[in-house]
Image (cartoon, rainbow, N blue to C red; front, side, top):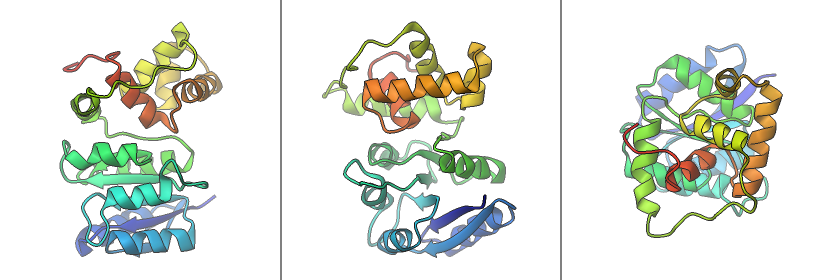
Length: 220
């Protein structure tokens, strides 16, 4: 199955570069592009791609607002959005994740990681740039310290706690399975249970909850 992607970035060189990288993949097709956030929302709503790849800082409508309109909690049929940014501590990334983004990448992440992120998002998974996972999530955990995170509707099991920590470290489902010596289907079952108990929409929100509740210590 071909993964249909919409790219939005106000820099022509970046947008064209991303399009060339993705179109070179046999399983990915860029079906639309946009130079600003408002156009990005219009194109995405019209084409209904499998994955949207959005820059954070765009004119007309920034990446956060665009993400919330397409993937926010009030959207009945949300699209998969991956945000990209130049800076690994960009203050807007946290807002984008809260708005429903399924993951984030740095613009210098490289073609391989970019392709992995698109495939992960299309599969309902998420990929967070490994080089910034701990620093970024732990840094922004402080931002919500004044409003304690919601407690789970049901206590987490020991295995769910293990899966939670592995996800917070930025591991993929396959890496979680290998680390905990469990099957891939078991990992998915635990993730579904975690999302249900935490009221999380995706693994990114699961990871953020782990940091916000102090289960992952900053500086690790």
